[in-house]
Length: 58
Image 1 (cartoon, rainbow, N blue to C red):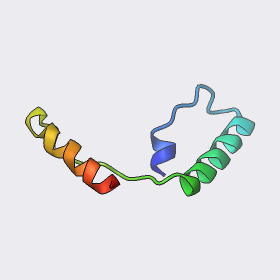
Image 2: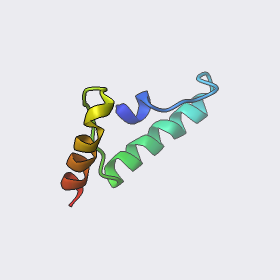
Image 3: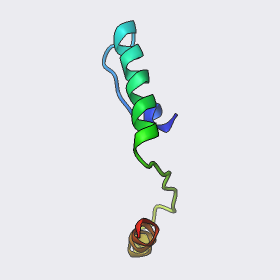
Image 4: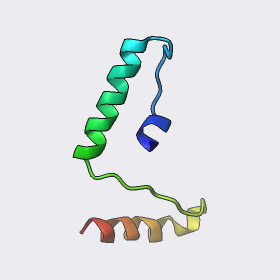
């Protein structure tokens, strides 16, 4: 659902577009590894966050 919540559609009444959008998000969410990133918003810890993401990806 995060793919839907973080996307933007100009015309939410265009039912064909909505259908295509839901289909696209369903396909891409199954094809691409997706992770939620939740961290305190403090600039001082950004290096630690970057290092944590790098470690996770290796």
